[in-house]
Length: 256
Image (tube, rainbow, N blue to C red; front, top):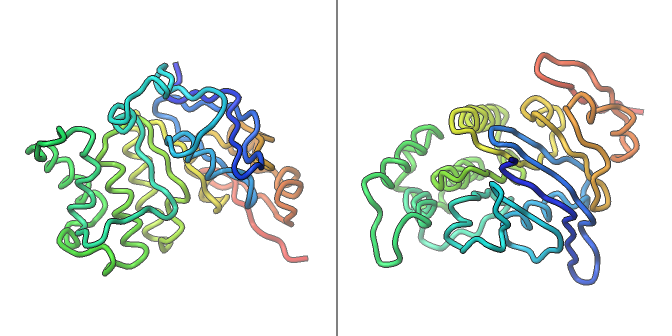
């Protein structure tokens, strides 16, 4: 049984069909990365899975259709990092990360010792302990990105959705964050569904890749089968050279 199973997923926004008949699975412990040109529907796909968009078709998590899950149950099953998360004003880092424990705290209750321990552990893993008392607006873009990821990891959900998780990070923190997600998905048997623009980085970490264009899946499989010069030239209208690296294909733009 797949941790995430999507069948015939379609989404219409403003009268335009953004996704059409998308089929996709992610197994427990598997990392699947969705790629594609701008406007392909990648972020829309993650928003639909995360429960933020109306859709047609079927989305099931661990064998249960999402329509059968309460809001609290869904928050325990799916954690997401959006490209531009909404941050409540006046929030410190530790208070924001503690929001990830909301599905486990009763409406009139307070966080438990375990909730605090989970948050402390996540802050330590993401090198954020020194920032715990800082207000989010005082952080750099890369620091905030790590805080957003920390909140999602604090949910301890079996499915993690990452929409361009390293877009605001320098190359060192990109590697730190992706290595951390890679370690956690192996340790916790997490299912990871991500979108990424950097094709070489995406190919290094993903077990499988899904190439979308025009709201449809046009290719899927191991990175070596999806990151080909023919497919990328056709779908991205780009001139590229694909080299074989130690951990996956390396995509190099080629000047005409």
